[in-house]
Amino acid sequence: MITRTIDRNFANMRLDRFLRKAFPEESLSVFFAVIRKKKVRVNGVVGKANQMLVEGDVVNIYENFKSVSDDDQKGESLPLASAAEAAPATPSSGDTPQRPDAKSAIGFAKNKSTWGHHLTGAEKQAHWGAHELDLVVQTEDYVIVNKPSGLASQPGSGTRPGESLVEYLWEWGRNEGLDFKPTIAHRLDQETSGLIIAALHGDTLRDFTRMIREHVVDKFYFALVKGNLKKDRGTISESLLRTDSAKGSKMLVGQDDENAQKAITHYRVKQHYEGYDLVKIKLETGRMHQIRAHFASIGHPLLGDTRYGDFALNREVKKLFGLNRLFLHSCRLEFDWQGEHKVFDCPLPKELRDVIKQLKPMRYERPENNFQRSRR
Image (cartoon, rainbow, N blue to C red):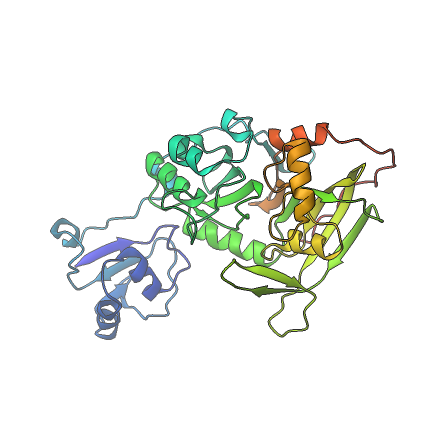
């Protein structure tokens, strides 16, 4: 008999899904058979495939799995230790005390020597790893990472094995003694830098996935766009349709197609420059390439954008200002977590600040206040 006590990573999960996750080396037919033959009991009661498990449930499996050692089949309760039990969260400079007038935690990205420029493939191979992760904050439930431009969020085509943010987080998790592989709750394009959330438990991942789907995680970006916008604040509300080709995926704007997805981008101008605008952007939806496709569609593509941008201008700004990457940076995350309002900030990396310093500002009155927060 095999016994497992459900911990937080597997809470609120169906019994059949738990079996697949807990014993990945076994075939699906094995799980179907033990459930059908009533060889799985939850708290002493015959379990059903669609039964939802809660933390503390005891699952007994009256079958010997080949992937489980003899010592593990003696019937003892062997809880899957939570990440908090395996490795207490270390203090971070980003986990600052909350404000007395509001339950809020504020975090800031650190300045690391390797985070001042776009990462090349050689640099990722030679110098990069878990030790270089810029953890803005580490809590018992999640970490927030400052991702550099040039680093893919997750493995995929065109990315070498071991050279994505997710894989570096897995390495970090192993070093920390975590039993759950840290998993990102959303993505950033490879050329985009800035803040990204990674969950340290299964239930945390499900919570963040739901929050992002319900648009209660506010995500802000800085972008430098071509030309000067007519309005100092505005909203781009145009559907996006994904197309795939040998050259890669791309989003078409404003297509009358049943597969097109609603996309809404809010922006306000932070500073007008001669020939360019620095804009702060708030996403209401989070579609692939949303910011890049939306601003290109209104005639103000992002600088350094090799897919939607002005290629002649990209060559010019590379020569004039040394811009070797997409000028798009995830600068702030805001959300409510366990009764506290969380705010995490990440200033522009050095290579983008260096570009701004070379631009000529234009005098104008800045829009008042910031974006309104999403309704909770």
